[in-house]
Image (cartoon, rainbow, N blue to C red):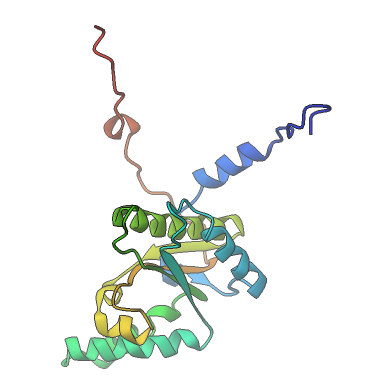
Length: 205
């Protein structure tokens, strides 16, 4: 605190935080290796992910954690749905689908439970779930892990959603794959700011 002011002193944490945001990269799930986050780290990840804007305090999202053998147990639901969609699929294709959630040491599903509300637009609730997913990705990066926010086909398959315990009004905002980076991620081209930014100008009258 600054003496006699009650104001917290500014430290060098702000540049570090900005560098953290600037250096975040998405890694492919297969590029995320063990060890995954510990139990305490998972709690930290979820705590941070739950601290997002939430108009009306509706908590329009929840989390499902997949780790250890549970990843393959959930994968069997994906496999079953895949077999129905593609009855002529080859064994190696079926095996790949079974292991969808086992590519990274930890997968956390962010479930959107947005719905009609007398005051809060459903769109704002959906955005809140997206914010929770992004906070989860950033928190993983801050802890030294890599992460990938994806959905893939099974996030939209009702058979899979039912098997994972989602209610009829719930949707998967994303499966966040988390693990240690197998190698340093490469950056990809980002859109030039001049192409995505405009400034609202007064008419001068």
